[in-house]
Structure formats: structure tokens, C-alpha cells
Length: 476
Image 1 (tube, rainbow, N blue to C red):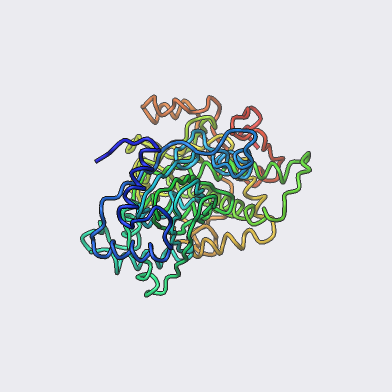
Image 2: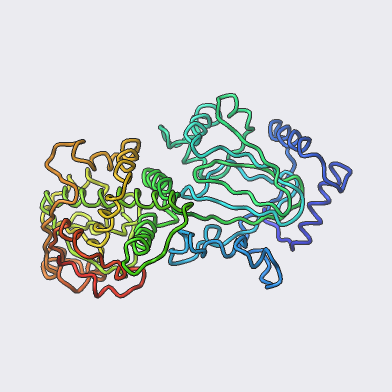
């Protein structure tokens, strides 16, 4: 049942419930309320609790005289800050880029969950009673999910087998259980009591939950910086396996951030010196981008060997989603007579079973050469290739296992020459569906040598993000 309240009416209702239960209008010790909360959860005798959650808006002041409101800690400004990855999104996402309000009462709870795409989150406590938070370190997330799968969920709850079964259910944000179950199985748990005027930040892949001690008002939003990309890739892989629609275009954000970083680092006119504390984030961007572009090149090589041809499409085109796994296809995608919907290059098995051969078309985004050239530039920096190899070795993504020649003797050489050539007229002949060409660039398709491209001057300023692409030709 949904009831409508004004803010003050909800406050009166919540305070009335609290005072009727405890014969007190003041705060009670956090430890006592924690015991009361878990006792009620364990006995199943919890009274009806109301929680006004996911309310679009912000309670931060816009007044120039308000120190917090005009600071960078104003959650309304967070996504647009210079180091925010989410500033590159084309549209706002409520709760992710724009904050939401959460108005609670005694024992209003937020169940165990991890943020969408393993993003950071930041929560500010505006007013009212405290909140108790429980948090799990991000590196303990697999152990957390294993305990939930084996000791919390009944088999009937899980819709599938394997490591992702519990993750799939936890995404529903309906699971609450006491932290002692985790401690009994050696999963570290940390607790914090948040008071008005305090921020709580959760890190990528860090499961968390909690409850309110009484009436209160909080505000939260997500954010991401450069070190999020590796974990964002893991989240994208899990979403793809579960065929869940992603909220963020991870591939697009990574490419745009990498190109902006390369502009700052490699531009001959640039004198920008990045702070030392940014080096870790820079490394994460570079390594994630190199992994992506090595995969893209190898996948193109494999598919070209089966007879496919390639054509460019405008860098201003809307990013499409893979019709199989729903990932964003920012760099490339495939279409053929068997499947008129876009398919990303990660589906080697499905693509090998397709008999279209030369009727299969790889669509590569304009700027593909610049992307590869920047990836090779990053690889020249000390430690980058070694970190790429380390992450690939430890990755569960099978598509990444053959990025280095030593792992598979099939004749592939990273960034080797790919002779890709197909005229726009032939695309129209081979794919007899006009909608496939609505976003195809009206220029000749690709024939290039990636090694020559990397040695040539990098025309970074012409790469997408709304800039004119007239200088970003595909010839070497």
C-alpha cells in the first residue's frame, strides 16, 4: 500500500511510532536499537515500517551563502566534477548521476546490495536520527556471495546454479540477514553509525546494508573515477551473463575517458601536469583501455579470417546494444543476413556458427585508428603491458584469454595488419535492409595498417565527444 505524505506529516507519523513504542521522544543508544532491530527481524514480529525511498531531488541548498551547498560536496554537483567519469554520459540517470532522497523511520532498512555497475556511492545524512551501516570490503564480495548462496538462500530462491546465482537475487535489494552469519564464515564486516552532517562512502563492489534509528532524511548518489573501470568491466561481464540491461555504457565511457587522458598526456601543446594522486586512476584507465582495444583487434582478425568485411559508421551515431548480451557496442558490432540486429564481437561461438561468411559486416566506429594508436602509446609506458597481462590472467572473461600470442599459437600478432575493405555500395548489396545503413558514414570504408597508424601523428582532438571528425580519416 502506498501512502502520500508531506515531509512534516511523515516526520510526525514516524515520531509518534517511536514515542509510542519506547515512551521517549529522544535518541536511544545505538547498541540497544541494533539489538532490538535484529531481534525483531529474527522473530518475524516487525511492525509495519514505512520508508520513502528513491525520491528524485536534493535537499542541498542552492544559496551562495551556504558553504556546503556551494562546495564540491554538494551531491547535485558531484557527477559534473572534472574527475567524474559520469560527466561523459549523454543523459542524466536519477539516483546515479542525480541524487535521490531517502526519508526513514524507526527500523526502515536498506537491504544487502552492491551499487549498480559496482559504482561508488556517497550518502549524506541531512537530519534526524542516526543510521547503522554494515559494509563488506569489495575484495570480499565473492566470499559474501558464497555465504549468501550456501547459508542464507534456500535452493528454491535461486534461479540458476553457479557463482552468479546469488548475485542475480541480491540485485533485487530484498535480502536482509544479520552480519554474524558472515563473521561465522570469516567474511569481514565493518559497522558505522552515521549521524546528521556526516557522509558515508561505499567503494566499488562493496556490499552494504543498514537501518534507521528513527525519523531521518538522507541523500545519495553514485560516482566513478578512473580506478572504477576494471571493476566496472567485471560488473558488465556479469550483467551480460545474466542478460540484464545495463544502466551505463561502460565501453563508451572508457573510450571517451582514455582519449581525453591521451590528449592531456600526448598533445605537443599540453603543459598540464597531473597530480601524483591521479597516477593510480590513470593506470586503471590505460590498462582497461589496452585490454579493450587488444580484444577488439583480435576479434576483428578472427572474424575477418572467416570472410567478413568491415565498414565505418559515424562517431556521432547513438551507441547500440548487443542483441545477445545487451552490452553497449561503442567500438564495433556485427550484422549479417542471419541476424539483422547488432551483435558485439564477444560472441565468437555464435558468430562461428553463422554461415553468412562474406555477407557478414563488421561496423567500426570512425576514429578506430585513433583508438588503436592511443592504446599502443599507452602500452609503451612502463608497467602497463605487465598489468594488462596480470589482469587478463586473473579474469573470468574467457574472451580475454587469448590476447597475447604466447597463449595460443594461431598465427595472430597483436595490432597486425588487417586488410579491411568494403565499399558502401557493396554493403547495400550484401545487406538488403536499408536501416542498417542509416548511421553508416558516407565515406569509403577501411583499409589500414595499424602499425603505420600508431607511428603516425595521433589526431586526438578529432575523436568524437562532439568534435568535428573531418580530420579523422581512415587512410594511413
